[in-house]
Length: 77
Image (cartoon, rainbow, N blue to C red; front, side, top):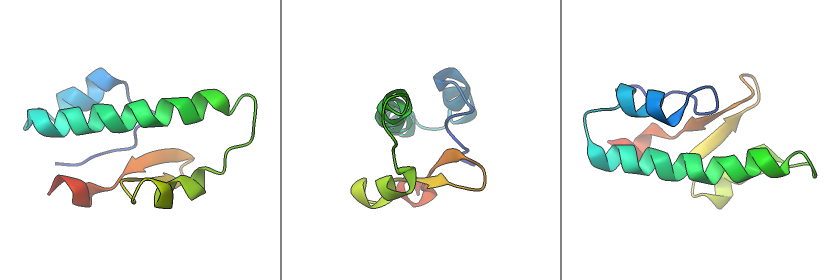
């Protein structure tokens, strides 16, 4: 199973890709729900996305090269 970048995928695409486990799908939805406010508030203030990783216990990180969010796959093993 490959957990890909989140911002470029819709919730439906993520679920289709990860049909193996309903619990994992719920975890991915929760992470996506956490990312959306960061993306929305960025219109008004600057968000240091790289600093979100330690706040969330490393469950997700922001890739500066790809300019996108990536889920830490260690949480799904």
